[in-house]
Image 1: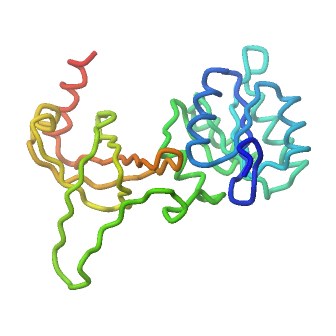
Image 2 (image 1 turned 90 degrees about the vertical axis):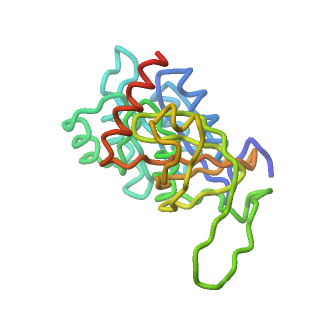
Length: 240
């Protein structure tokens, strides 16, 4: 497979955003999912690529520089007139008002995401429209043999904490955690952050990176535990 071409198993994602640095970041994140990606800052170039390249999905920013504020609305409308309803469109913009969201969806956008980029959420939305590599397609996917008898089962794995947020933790490791799985974390660092040395956290979402064979998961704190929330907020403020 040529790395610079889309294939049936490597969908083609076309994006338009006036921020060149963001384009580089987004391209890298999408390519890590095994996708073929092209980015542009020009509406003219964007529509040329739509016409000649037959993308599997488009990601559109609403503001394209000071002179083209809100141009993304016109892009959505034009794509729907030219390509019809079959081409999936995702808006990824800093504009977050209910009015903007409603207008974009009414014009034909399928999803609306607000910047800054949430990689796990974006991957989850992409799965609704295109095929991302499955676990069986990854070069290395560690699996465990688990007894088929009914009863409790415990598996111990090691994860690297990538990011602490107000409502949860991003972790990275060699194992894929299914959404809805309960994960028990323990350790001195956890106590420093949350005030608890051991916590059961729910897996909110997971994403696979085929190029590295690694996985990232977002684990949520108990939303009803005010003690954890306040302790984590104080810890985050102390890091600033």
